[in-house]
Length: 102
Image (cartoon, rainbow, N blue to C red):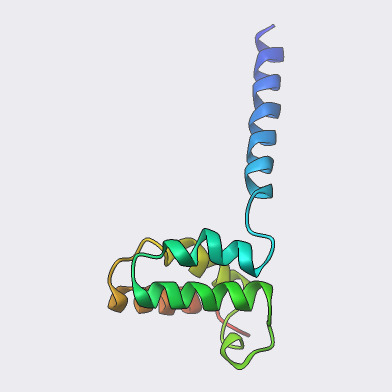
């Protein structure tokens, strides 16, 4: 009985995780609405719009060539909460350094 309960709990937790990921942005407008508009700094908002554009719209734009998809995901995840513009650019450098273009 306990094993059945644990198995059911495991399956439900996996379904909750999958459904949470399904509600992420699927296109540029969704990404901009979810992340760029909530950025805590002006440069953070600009960088989030760039990340959303490079992730979902124009991957071949000149400003997108220095970012991998993993770096863009890193930016989208981490830049929004940073309140100071100087710190935003530190996060941007960290995301590019951690996920370099090869």
